[in-house]
Length: 16
Image 1 (cartoon, rainbow, N blue to C red):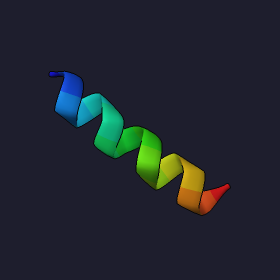
Image 2 (cartoon, rainbow, N blue to C red):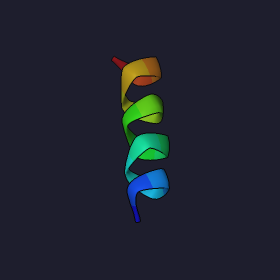
Image 3 (cartoon, rainbow, N blue to C red):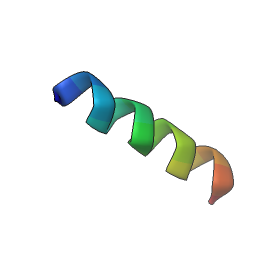
Image 4 (spheres, rainbow, N blue to C red):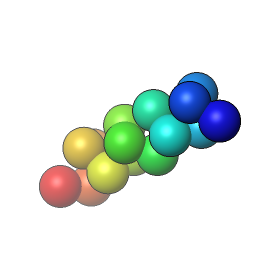
């Protein structure tokens, strides 16, 4: 669960 969240955050950071 935590890993998935971090992966999503990484994607968001890249798109921002």
